[in-house]
Image (cartoon, rainbow, N blue to C red; front, side):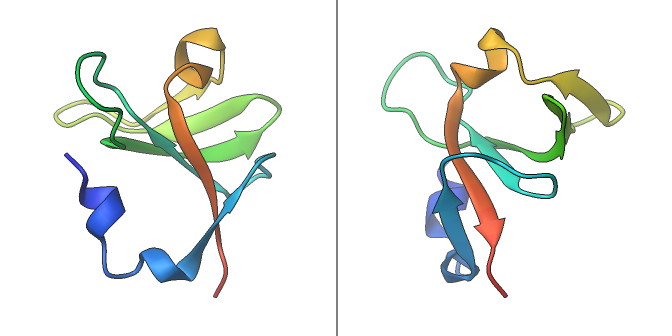
Length: 79
């Protein structure tokens, strides 16, 4: 937990409000305790994103209410 908050390359990313295709999405998947980003995906556009859980195939999912409620940040690479 918190790997996205302490990553040494975090300065290469800017937080954005409205994601565009290719932007990163950080999710806080835990429901107890402080919300910390511990899952990530890539916004594909048209309300879809690509993500991967360990030991599972990568998948495209809709950025529906279930996922939007867990968004910690949308991030755009600046470099």
